[in-house]
Amino acid sequence: MSIFFSKMIGTLAVIILVAGYIGANDLLSKFYSAEQRWKYIIISGILGGIFGIYGNISGVSMPGSGAVISVRDIGPMLSGFMGGPLGGLLSGLICGYHRYTMGGITAVACIIATCAIGVLCGFITLKFYEKAIQPRNAFIIGVLMECLHLAIVLIVVKPFDTALDIVRQIAFPFVITNAVGFAFLISIMTFIERQRDITLAQSRLQSELEVASVVQHSLLPPITDTFPGRKEFEIRAIMETAKEVGGDFYDFFFVGPDKMAVIIADVSGKGVPAAMFMATAKLTLQNAIRDIPDLAEAVRTANDNLCARNEADMFVTAWIGLLDIPTGEMEFVCAGHNPPVLMRSDRAEFVRVKSGLVLGGMEGIPYRKETLTLGHGDKLFLYTDGVTEAENEFHELFTEKRLGTRLDLLRDKDPEEIIKSIRSDITSHVHGCEQFDDITMLCLKYN
Image (cartoon, rainbow, N blue to C red; front, side, top):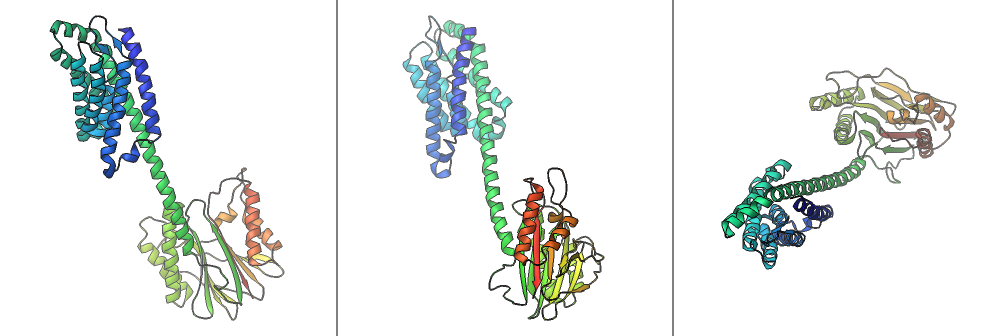
């Protein structure tokens, strides 16, 4: 019995190794489409037949009877699992015929048994696939199939006493080795299949996120030679998301010929939910500001609209300014956002006012309108907390203080150079640490 076990286990190990390699390299799934299903059935049947032939060749012959004890049946069982009844039948015919050519008292019984096992495994997996791929159930199926094989030997082989003697000698190692091997092989194949599905799903998700990132950036206003296209001011901005998509955004648009709205905002959270709420908040603010002349009332209306459809309980901090281009006077509302920095020729200072509640937090909240005046050459620097809260390996933040100090030194620079310099400072500060929050900056120079 120990000879049977050791020889069959060695053969089984080779079959499992080869089957695992085939599964891992995705050699069969390319034929799995409906148009090529018949090719998949044939290839899986031939593959199982080859496994069965290898089982025949490496099997153990019983002295005196010519019976061959092997793991041949795993080939038809596997083909039935992959290619259905037809795949199992094809595999059974291939390795069964090979077994028949080897001769012996059990030759006819073996060809009948291998074909029957392949067909039955095919029907079982067609009807109960999800249950059949569970290791325990696969083991039970293997036991039943090998018991069927032994039953066919008892029925077909004559005289019956000889058949019974063969079954007594091989039953335990024959059933257990084939059943355990089949269960183990199914476990490996289904695990590889699931890992491949996960990889494909992740690849599709990554592709979709890349498209979403492009779409999100397309929602931001372009800064080109033709837009904004006004000599009275110069504007530059960047948005870098911590993930493929994020919740930060900036916006600027004209409200009539001589007024321009400037917005910077930061949605709570990250990723796809934040990006979706970002798009909603941007559109809601833009519509409210264009439709309602009073800025404070426009922000209040936008907040009410965001609260009314905020099932995800998200919120957004925002700084909204409305610049009168001829005079340089800017009305603004702060909704829980970081204070901007006003850069004049002699100093840079934070514009600190009493902030209103974040948008999307609670309906019916009034917002207070403040004003500031931009003079010739003044710059207004807006940012999100991804700038001041950028963290290095020692968990030290970039901080408002460091930002204010750097901007004070950059007073005479143009907006593009200011943003590039601050971004470079942040990169130096974090020193290669992962970016945990979106980084968004906007700099407006009044001419």
